Length: 449
Image (cartoon, rainbow, N blue to C red):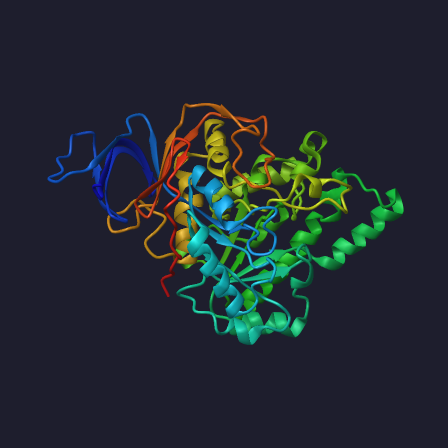
């Protein structure tokens, strides 16, 4: 089989521009990008893909997923969730440390990499988990081979809460690589729980979830993380921001490459508001909580103004049985990687974002922020991580086309106007109109340090 492939006459969205052109793939890499609709002669055998009328984008890089492997594989695993990811145009992901066992030592972290090398259809990286007492392990992390260290400044994942003041100071002072945080203030949350238990009893309805895990809890913790990063001149990336108030903590004045403090928002905080709890219930229960329409609009504005640097999913599958119960007992999190790109393209259709902005925040932004080597752009010499999309091929999410191992989606019943047709990972056509190349495995992401 020829190792040359040419994608002809695509509408290419890349580096702030949309233009007609063709992309030549040689082996794992992009060999050339041709602008214009003229025919390009290739002097050796090749495979040709006619992309007339279709969008060609860099593969999406999702900087926050929970693929549940190892230890929680009844919910999802590296094979099932990476398969869903590539079907959605996600070619690279960064997985979180709160698996079983938790990835808080180099040995456990490397075990996860070894597992991914045998199971993942997409490219992968794993963040090292921070605890109150593993600073020496953190210092062993090779920043060229690991995306960053993940700190839970909130208790949504149990005993990984980092709440020791000395430990916090030392991590921010002594760790030079990127520090990634989940920010919710635990004392504020516990105070709110006590208040609503006194008011409503133990069976608190889901509509109170954003009042318990409140905007104030988010702001207080995020502000503290920014304060520490500023004090120690650390590199800080704050995950899944959910409130208008938090936007005051971030700047749009510097280009991303020059920022030391950066921000992420997730699809669900851009799509849903607290008005949707009545319809979707616990299916849209996340931590941090989905909040008001005012918050949602502020997050949209922050994406468009570049206060927010990355759009991700926080893909966190649970069994539907785990999503049952009250606001205090139902599991937080939901599956999203298969539908993240098409959801964002739907917002483009609604003129909430431009195509160029979506590609910037889902492809270029993660590559720049994490300093990923040769990914995130359609450039000669870069890995051929690409996704071909038909912007006018509607489909409705239902149980027959959901690929998550947990078998459900908060988008069930939603019709998206765009369809992912083909996804290349390192030059391999891994996903092709519903069919997968099961022999392909992704690569470990490397970082420019």
